[in-house]
Image (cartoon, rainbow, N blue to C red; front, top):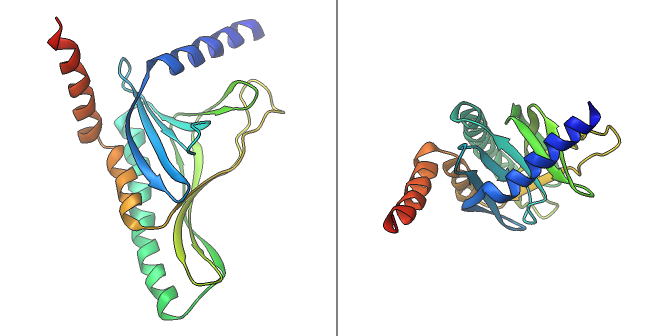
Length: 193
């Protein structure tokens, strides 16, 4: 049984690495982070860092919409709180805005690709530095590998320094953007048929 699971994970990892195509990026304070699509299955992979060593998989629009709604809701609350923090000269504070369970699976590279099946916890937070700089952050706590309870991912933190970058992430997960990319890719293939 263990060999079968290991074989399936290996096949999945191989398929993930070969079938994904980057269709867009969003900006964080650490740099550009990519979103990829499996053009055969339509699954979306949202990287959680600039290295691409951790990602959340979304199998369909329903799961992406949960995350989009979470981002939009928490960003709205963040904007309200940010203004209050500025008005009241608040600094050196981290405050949790909202929490959601999103996606269908989680992949991370730790001595090879590992997977954690099921939803991933994501926390939206407001971070205010000692100098009063206010940032929106997405925090994804450690996950445990489904194949080995002793293998854990690192906590991921995506920090945004402006609201437009957060909205760009939200937009990247919409059917409109994904379908436009897939159509463009399909048209490239059709040129040579």
